[in-house]
Length: 182
Image 1 (cartoon, helix red, strand yellow):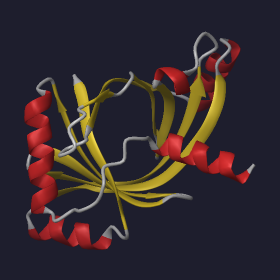
Image 2 (tube, rainbow, N blue to C red):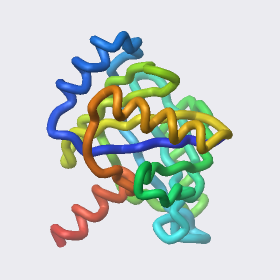
Image 3 (cartoon, helix red, strand yellow):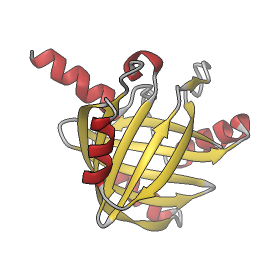
């Protein structure tokens, strides 16, 4: 399966949240997410556009591998897709110890508060990302990329979300911000 998503920087999540509620979106919950990213010893994930992450959300922990982004390339949607694998793990600390012993190195961390809604065949996430600000992500999990892109464009229009789609991850934004400080 592919994760097809559009990420847009917004001034505030409040207006989008109001529109979601008035459109009948189903609230899935709000959670704090602590994401730790790791780089491989045998290739540089920044170069290959891959990601390996341990995510802690409350009492749930999972390991995620994301393949390189498959760009749509159209100026109209400019959404991205990528292969994604997730597996639940018991302990972030134990998994990190395994990765470090295998030669992986911790790249950085992303801390965010995410409110999620199910709406019109998508998951809409309203994110407050520490050090970066407010974002909306519209995501579809599918094998049919064209249909998913049409769905995302429709939801964006229905929710009156304007702005450029951001092609980089929160991790990439944070790493760029950290490099500017040096």
